[in-house]
Length: 216
Image (cartoon, rainbow, N blue to C red; front, side):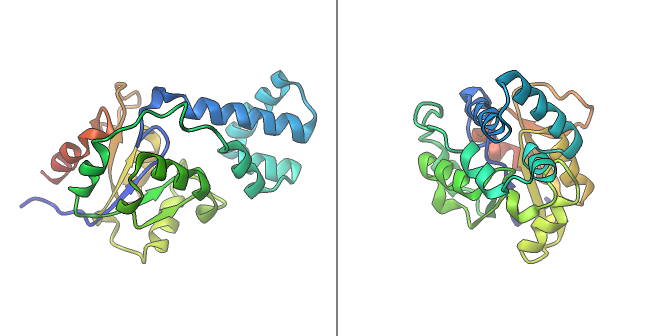
């Protein structure tokens, strides 16, 4: 008997669109600019600060808030204010693909709802997602920490983790989800590096195939 999954949690950036689009690079440039402005630093120093904060706090936002008392909402809105039209190609097939999947679908992202809403509208897939769980909802954690997943499921009414699937482009995030009892699908063209052996698809266009493999 095939397993059934009732809730799908979709990552946003580099999962719902190809990673080579450069969106994350554009966000990274905005992060460096934010650090430069707030701390009056050179670009090189800002880049070094970002590396250190990510290593220590798992996210630049948390590190900036902890060490320099910056406002998280201001940070998130500034760094995600990018031009999507010049970066993300259209994907006319994606609405049809998502509409064919009967499970309840949510966005679970380390970014901000403002950014997620823009991406969903741009890709014309807003109607297929019931809600968005963003970085603010899982504070003080990020998806790179296992503790974020019980919080996210709590926001959905505490469903059985075994009935939920995390769909993400990061191996470690999919692994965190699995460690908390969820199932996972890795969306990434690159070979897996850390030996997790996740079910993997090269792009979101193959999500139905990934779900079929998961159910076997």
